[in-house]
Length: 311
Image 1 (cartoon, one colour):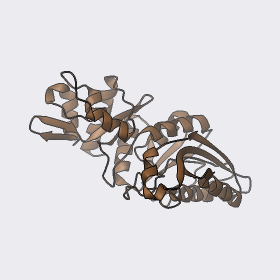
Image 2 (cartoon, rainbow, N blue to C red):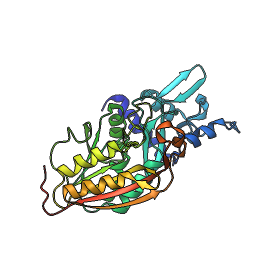
Image 3 (tube, rainbow, N blue to C red):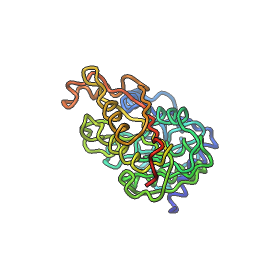
Image 4 (cartoon, rainbow, N blue to C red):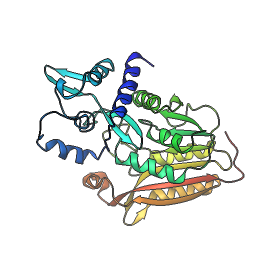
């Protein structure tokens, strides 16, 4: 890790020592909060690292300010300061992710889907020896999995170097040992694994941003591609835990149908359920979604049958 990375690990540890907590909401909710006029005197740590409001040097103590500067995340414009990153809490862990608004192509997004993903993993994870988090982002899935399966080896794989940097920092702050792999899906993940977890982008037409655009099939393409790649490498009894979204068209869930076909082809079982029936409702105004009833957050558990063999 670089000196800047180490400073950011220390920053997360310092925030944890100050009992920092912040649940990151949707961008729409965040935007509405920023429209509210700030009431009061000094900004709190939640204002600085959660709501990402501009602040003055006297609003935070000198240790926090020094660590921000050493970590390269302090933006200074005269007396007006701001953080280039946000910090979210999930359980006892803190996670660095991109500042607001996360518009860059390599932005590292963390929000309500991350919390639902972690809950899904806590409900569905079983014993595992090696867990690969495909498209790990800020590392929420892999670190949440490590809390459930502390003896498992954790692999955080992502195509985005900025995501991997933050995932490495977040894992170090959480004292979770993780292998970091820059990879498009599973392409560069070496060696066998018995569990794959994934929370892929699932929206269509999101400006090509890597953390949102799920490709064609109304955003389901990446979910299917990652599921196919994982099943091809899982051993008998190996499992894929996939949290994603599905566009429901005239009452039909095409992703579910595609996963059922894939499971049959690969000799896997499938359990599938809706976790939230209506997410990202604003996307229904996008031309690509003109026939879509709603977008559902879904969870799929796919387990390889007895004839499978590890790749």
